[in-house]
Length: 123
Image (cartoon, rainbow, N blue to C red):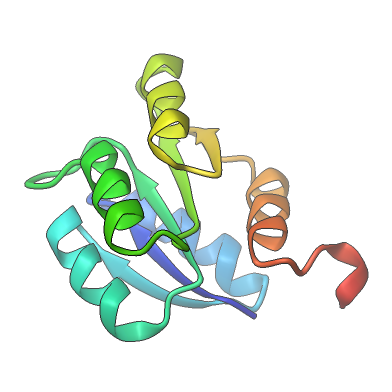
């Protein structure tokens, strides 16, 4: 089980990620923008951040840059339904992986497992 911070301002997308990740046994925290995400990350011992790239206030790309500057060990998975250029920029900014929306549940779980070092063989 990992502590995962989901940064998503769309309630339906939050719900989808909640269902997928809770079924996999993870503890979830939610933020609707980058400012809230930074506050939660610094307090909760988060292991993986899953962030949308298009957010109010501090957007996802800026969130990734700030997280990596303040917490170099931060593990970030970027998610977007807008296009591959933004996802490529997220990788350059420090995201360990990217996913296009709609998120494939199997791919998401595999990326989270890989990110926390708990691949399929450690169950």
